[in-house]
Structure formats: structure tokens, C-alpha cells
Image (cartoon, rainbow, N blue to C red; front, side, top):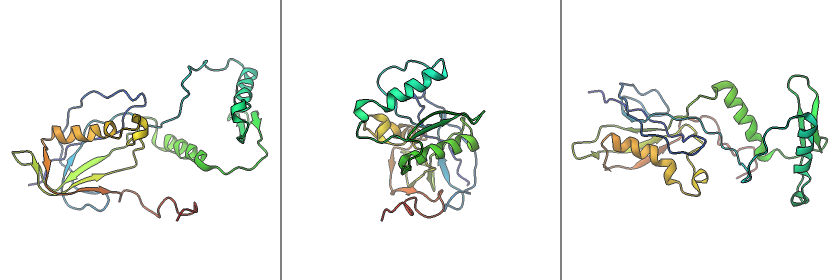
Length: 216
């Protein structure tokens, strides 16, 4: 008998407000992803908005600048604060519509991009996938739980790069980020797992990300 997959996704919303309980739906699905072949049980829950986490200062924003002059002054005031005296800023803001330079600070200097390269990753994801795209994280098993809730065999966590599964978004506590996955298992009747918990990264292809960055 072909097992019926239950669908789940574990991306918390940007506001970090806990999403409402989702009802699991059941469909039949053959295995087509990564290294897992054949039919399998898939535990999934409802999806939530994509997460592109941005650091935000504690103080309340003053709102958007009303004029270009005000915007330029705000940017200049920010990068020239005394607390940044030992830092190096390289900024250049160009209008996408006119090509006019709106603001620049040390724009002629060369800097290592470091984590700024993540901005290109986010921009590409938004352009190609759209703001409503959901990053799914699935739980797979070879069978359904028995009447006592025991899952015979391994439970496979099949990740697709959800950046919201981390402790940083939950005040250093990783467990809230895992709650949607736990809820999916609970709603599917799983109370215990006889096998191993396996993380499957086969969704990603190519060399490890650190090659070329000088990290051994």
C-alpha cells in the first residue's frame, strides 16, 4: 500500500508571531527529490511567509525621508557617528530609474564584500521566486506510525535551506523554530521513533559553500 504523505513547512513569519495551528492535508506522492527513492510517508504542515531576517535597531524608525536632501543627511549622520570612528563604510546609492547617484561615502575605495554578498542572494531569491514563495522542510519515513504512535525506522529531515530554522530569531532558543515540525509529527500521531533522526542535505548540489572563501 502506498503511504499517504502529510505536508509541512517550517518557516515562521517575519514578525515572529507564532502562526495559528494548521490542519494537515493528505495526498499521495511518489518520491522524486534528492537521494530518497520509492514511495514514502511525508509529514508536512501548512506553510507560512518566507523569512528574510534583517537586523533592526531597538529605537523606533522616524519614517521615510520626505526629500532627497533629508535622506542624504540621514545617511551621512548615520555613517559618521562617533561609535563608528574605527569602522570603514563604503556606500553608494544610485537611482534605478535615472542612474543618478543619490548618496556616496568612500565609494571609490575597495572593500571585502563579506556578508554584504547575502544582499545579492536575497535580491535574486525575491526576483526569481517572488515574495510569496515558501521554503519547505519535510519529514519523511518509510512507514506510518502504528496504533501506539511508534514510528518504526528512521525519521528523515529533508531541508531546503529555510533560514528561519535558527536560534538567533528566537532569543537563542532553537526549539521554537522546530515547533512546526514537532506539531506535524504530533498531528500525524507520532509519539516515539524507533530509528534514527537523519538530516538529508541532498537537495543542494555542487561543492560546499566554503570553497573559494579560504576556509579549510
